Image (cartoon, rainbow, N blue to C red):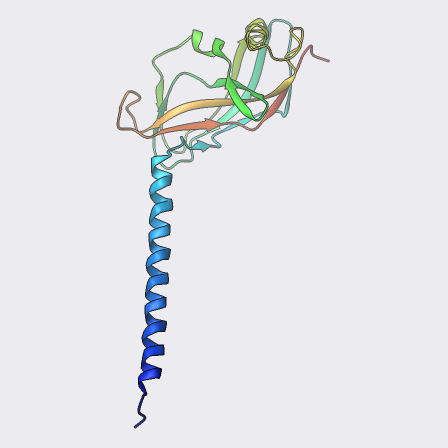
Length: 179
């Protein structure tokens, strides 16, 4: 039988203590990061919308953006009547306020629901919104845009306990005037 000296036992204890401390520090770091992420909640963006084209030609009177919607979340989601139009200013997305002028009661979209429709907005509303923000040439609405549709998980649109999510589309360009 082999005998261990006090020096070998001390080295073994020190190695075990170091491993234990390292494990505790790693676990504490992981818990800290996880708690910080829950405290700094950001609404998840889900790719639920896809526009028909990466470039949309705009007529002088109305913007028509064809898009497909697919609820692939595995849960029902509830939201307003349609998406909002957002423009990219610098590196931030800004919702154009004319979207909220018309509203309805909203609805619930069951998991697996897929449909195709059009987003419509007056061209003059987009020009006015951009002018109010001091962005771009007032005679042009050329730029990068996307559609965003706010939802909550579940069937109750007005629930205060439901988790908010947003469906977003791909980025696309509005070309005005149309070529």
